[in-house]
Amino acid sequence: MQFSSVLLENAVNEFAKLPGIGKKTALRLVLHLLKQDNGSVLHFSDSIAKMRSEIKFCNRCFNVADGDICSICANSLRKQDIICVVESIRDVIAIESTQQFSGTYHVLGGIISPLDGIGPDQLHIEALVNRVEKEQTAELIFALNPNIQGDTTIYYIQKKLQPYAVNITTIARGIAFGGELEYADEMTLARSLQNRLPVEKYVSHR
Amino acid sequence: MQFSSVLLENAVNEFAKLPGIGKKTALRLVLHLLKQDNGSVLHFSDSIAKMRSEIKFCNRCFNVADGDICSICANSLRKQDIICVVESIRDVIAIESTQQFSGTYHVLGGIISPLDGIGPDQLHIEALVNRVEKEQTAELIFALNPNIQGDTTIYYIQKKLQPYAVNITTIARGIAFGGELEYADEMTLARSLQNRLPVEKYVSHR
Image (cartoon, rainbow over all chains, first blue to last red; front, side):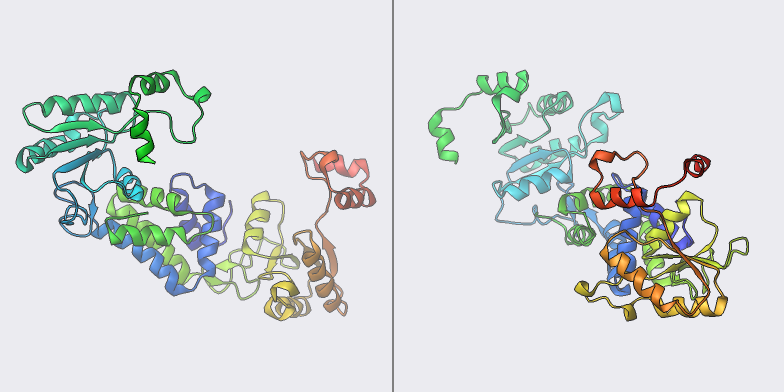
């Protein structure tokens, strides 16, 4: 693409570095911003720069926070002795959106994946074990993506937690609501048969 | 969506204001930026703020420019007496990408569209007429989108230019390369039959 302005070209190139945004989309976004007034574009660029430079990570659960402790850990109405272990901040947002969980989180920052060079030491696993020991956590719920790496991570952490009297669970695997049986893979279908629920329990959840 | 950080929420909301970007995509982009180092995110936000506050529009053709005159108007190798009239900056970039045009441009900033409340006075039509008069332009090529508004704009400008000895043309309408005859609309097909080309001319263009 040929631009007659270096300023425009720089802005387009910066946008095109974002995931899933090509040159044409980048140009569309930049020309949109060019049509907005100066103030709102400054507001846009400021909010991004500020987010990156001022955001902190919670000392306790490694979720994003505006201070030393995130708003979930600081909320006394939430059950502080229940910890939901997730891979990333994105999962915290997804679970919070369900409004069905009133405990706290622990963000691992990834999952154990030797092929990608990610071992237990790069994740916040030691902090989790220390937390369970110090806080005498009652229940630990694993909400990791259902794949080999997720299962390995669960197995590793569970081994580490054996000395402590914490109840360890994992979110249910099964056929997704609205899914169709015939298109489910065999492993999911087999697991959902093994872990079948009494109907009263299922009905009471609806 | 529930965020545990106001900084994160602000950044996501700002991204979600861009056209074609919803909340989930905005979150994905913001979390991507959060993973980058501080310097490159500052570079991203600076390039956007700078683009909006420092970019200028060419005094002559209203294309984007870094100074008073855009790089195309300032280029003495380009034929300054041929003007290609386009709707927006985007069209300039599209035509420049073909590398087939060596004249200059005139960006109208829109097309006449009474339904959207856009009349000739909101566009850079007077500047175009003055330019043709002053510069004794040899040829004016209309490269507007082929629709009623585009044709109205062509008709209006052509009337205004009647006193001047300028040769007025429009880019060819017809079946697009790679298009299929059976799916072409009747108007396009009818026009491409009326304006048929001698085969020698077609072959020489390839």
